[in-house]
Length: 112
Image (cartoon, rainbow, N blue to C red; front, side, top):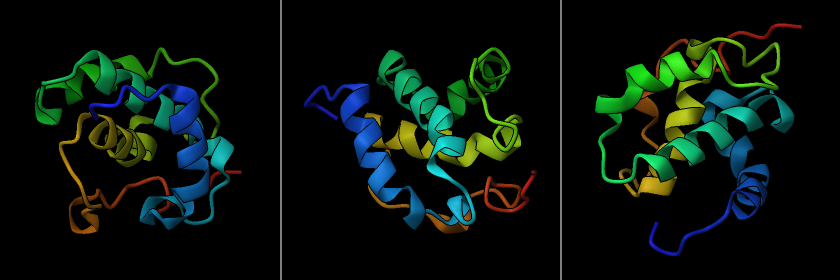
C-alpha cells in the first residue's frame, strides 16, 4: 500500500467491509476491530516481510494486545482477520482467499 493510509482511514474501510469476510459472520465490528488494527500496524512495521516469516511473532504479540474482546481473545479466533489486514496494508494478497483461511477462524465459534 504505497499511499500511506492511517489507521483511522483503514478503520473506516474495515468497518464498512468486514461483514463481507467469511470469518466475520455473526460478529460485531467492535469484536474484530483490535485484530484489524493489529494486522494493520504489524504490516506497516514489517513492510517487505512475508506473512509466514512473522506469523509466529505476531501470534506471541497478540497475547499482549490490550482491549481484546472475549470473542477475539485467542490467536486462532483472530488470525484470519489479522492476516487480512496485513495483506491489505502490505499488498501481498489482492483478493480474499477463503479456501486458505483456517477452519478455526473468528466466524466459526461464538463466545458470549
